[in-house]
Image (tube, rainbow, N blue to C red; front, side, top):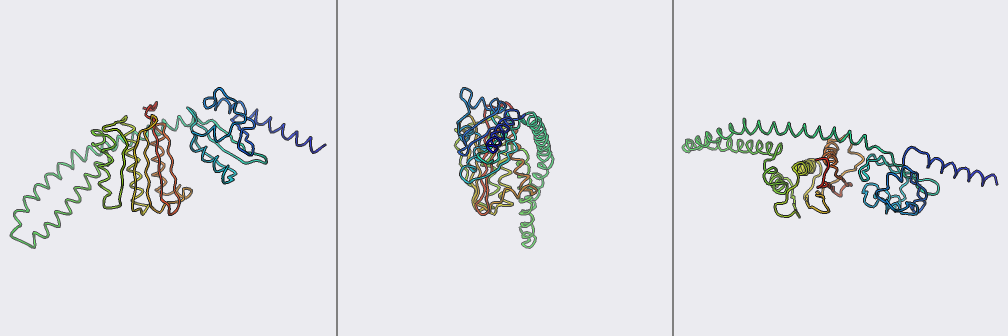
Length: 336
């Protein structure tokens, strides 16, 4: 009898904690169906199930469209994962720090509202990105207006000298080597200017800009680009710029770190969003080991650009199995 009272008191105390906690709590049974839920969680999730009770619903159904959380719940269900910690999860127009913990007879999900913090972070991100792009634009203009004309003038002078060297084979051979070095330098500077602020992106859009950028990687590895956009389809300039920078960052990471033979890029528009997928067959890496590496910085930059436009960013990789990056950006975007 004493044991029964203790168990009952324990259950009552747990129920008390769930109801009075200052954050959302969802208590799941062993089948990951909702057993109980407090008022905060109901408020947070009412847009997902506005006219239905959450009790008895499968957590995988409730969070089917919340990619990160859905994937973690699948690992709990199929692989017996006992804990997860998601720093930032978007649910409708709010952001949450979500943790999940296995308990004796089920699983508990805790939702902590971090929306205000994320709004402040997003404003800081947007300000930082705007500053970076302004500086890139300034440098590209300086190269175009200053170095560009000088290179063109030098090229004409060198071509004029070439005609005068036909009678001296030794000097002509030396000149040819010099001219090839100059041509390489000229191409590198054009590439730098193009990378800083690609005129083709502004004039012709993301599809043509990606095609042009891929020319710089022909000698490094094979890149297959498949666009499923309508002919001439354009997006807001900030969306196109974000996609272009993600392609740049990804291909540079592949060139430096992946040791890949083939990379694939897909670009498509579906369900009022544009989706960019980049995949390589390189050596891959452990996501948990990248935090202090320059590869990690590149991934943070890609995620930042995507999330600044209310998008979804996902990266999956494992050793010797390559890497896949997915960036989804909504076309109806309140950040623009």
